[in-house]
Image 1 (cartoon, rainbow, N blue to C red):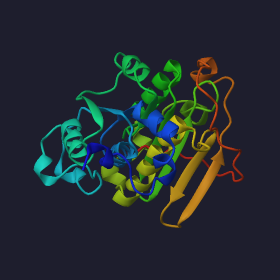
Image 2: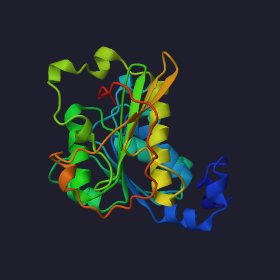
Image 3: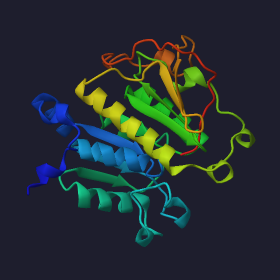
Image 4: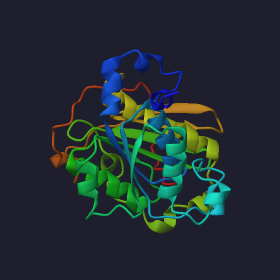
Length: 272
């Protein structure tokens, strides 16, 4: 069996029969920032969809406490760099995918170079500062990205099209005080929630790259697994946003979601 057989999940009938969309994925480069609870399922589904190049960045090493929610890592990987562990398992399952790994943290210095070299960014980070950094860098570079956060049984995701849709700072202009945000260790993270939200991030990337459907732009999607409730929260672009008000307008607006029908209280989720 050739390596091409590993490139698409059986459920993806539309992409398998559409050569243009298949080619668009094969030519695409996606940056996954963080190989934790969100980055693992996102990277898996992107590789399964046939994305040509995945760029993986994470400075951390695999710890025993990660294993219940970070599904690309195994017991034998404890102590290994997460980018190496994730890349090894992705190559084993999807040998056609090309992988670039960076065992370092995203910064103001390296972020622009990394983001300008890709077509889409998945924000799978697990900290307050990192999420604002991804937003600011992606918007200023004109790179569309999927934000997400999880904490306990709660998850949220938002797709940002710089120059066309609201960004993360339109929702939350400044990071909250650090003592107001519980850590993953304090609040806990349910692995299944990470799988749901990480898969949604991959789906957003695939839709953007192929033009297959509307995106969750200008719309924060939230999920509460305890009440089994989904919400779509309308988000308006802030004309005075310190970041996206000056964003480049060269990102295609195609795929922006229709206005959501339900407003809700918006609270940030910073867990991975």
